[in-house]
Length: 242
Image 1 (cartoon, rainbow, N blue to C red):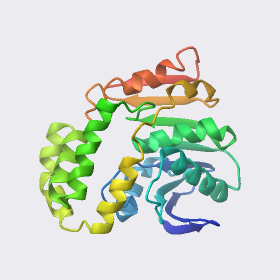
Image 2 (cartoon, one colour; image 1 turned 180 degrees about the vertical axis):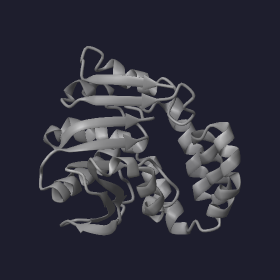
Image 3 (tube, rainbow, N blue to C red; image 1 turned 135 degrees about the vertical axis):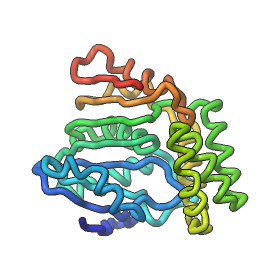
């Protein structure tokens, strides 16, 4: 596994790479309180079954965050890095949660970069009601309450049995959360406010698989259904809902 940094004219972005397949898969992770590459080894182990067929890249968000950073801006930055990593050739993309929002934006604005796409537990439209959950997460982060933030975040994202098993791990992780981590989390979370590309999904050209859960407490159980409905007449787009 390699961990590296891409430098452009305006920003740098960290990534990790593993696998040796002939196709390139780019993973755009969801929101996290700490940078995901701190768990690069764990991520690589989780995707080991895919490494024969794919060379996998996991992208962070840019290192130098502006004070305001929209989903479109995040997607444009990620697209720029994808161009560098794959020399402008199309890749397969898996985007989870906020990463799914970025993946959809890239597929809309840069169709030449996306061969196939998987969207996991994401949303194409964040309503005021849905954003209320994220506002509470932002308040905890601004208060510096990493322990309460991680517990609330974990309870919303994990099934109850998994959350209970992970409680001690979350509490221990909270001890290592820094002020910089919390500041980054706030900026990245604020970026989803008002996000709405639902009507633009008709412009997506690549095959897509949408994966979601009826019990999604972060973005709503019907968010994945609404995404898939935009492609319901396309045989190369599917929905899997648990």
